[in-house]
Length: 480
Image (cartoon, rainbow, N blue to C red; front, side):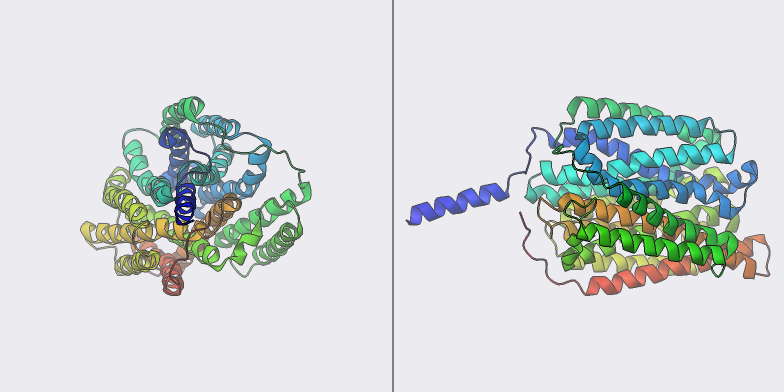
């Protein structure tokens, strides 16, 4: 009897240590997606450094030029909620190969764009790819990696998500120092071709194609709701927060989203399973990921513009001075992923947001006359704190779900992450413009004041995240 009991325990343990859908070489299966995700996230911030010059070349205002960033993330936020449904209609290989091909088309359109409108169209086409690949990376990882390696797998994905946006301005600055902004997009293509080949050769289909009924009305509600939310805050930098168009768009968007969420909760086959928010651990983890991304996106939007317009640093040098922060970001992302398997998530997340707050305060004290090393230091400190909190937050939230709901959880987490990131960028833009308008000093002083007001929003987000992290309780055992 005792022997039989021991055998059952061993079998149960082995089952818990086995991937849901084992593959011989899980890393090779992921590599094509990781390259696509890296280029997608790289594209999210790579144009930040070129925005001041693009405003002049394309003859548009700061409120209009921000759409190259927020428009890209808007499409990601619209496509992401549909990724779970699409994965039930098409195989993993089909979706990933389509996504990589789609990004190549969007990059070509952007590279050849003669004006702002065509450039924006190309950017939004690229957003489709990122919206498909981001949730699939998480879903595939949870299926092909055994549970005890999930933290490391999330760290690998976190490296892509955190390092690419951080290194984007550096690479773009180097390109702009030698070539024109068009080459930012031309240079995406070779990497995408490599990713396409690797995905074609190594990526198996790990999803289940069941072809459920499509709820077209819910798709419309989702697109209008998420799209309206980002549009409303993006309009604020030009029209003002008190304007009728901003308030009206925001109210309508919130009502449509509420309708959409209620419809999904009531549905037997929802596009997104919002019931996962019934788990408090997942809810807290998701919220922390969203806030972390808001910090990253808003600061990475403001920093290159401050370097160029506040400190009068040339565009090529701007890319170089942002490199130390990008490198630190990559290293910390990798380390945080590995430690999240061994160390209390509360410790890592709380420490991460505490360090982030210190970095933001350092930058808030920066002036137009501040030495270069001081601003680099502030950037580095933020790039230590934000990634330190990101991977543990993702693992903490997703580990609360079972295999049946992990796909919905990762899709929801990434959808709101992109929407919040787009909104944070738009809010930072409006506050930047507001701060410049209030200032009576010269151009550099005015921009520095605008930078500080925009960064106050980032500080508030970091403080809120830090307080939420303090409420985390000891992690419960993972559900399999």
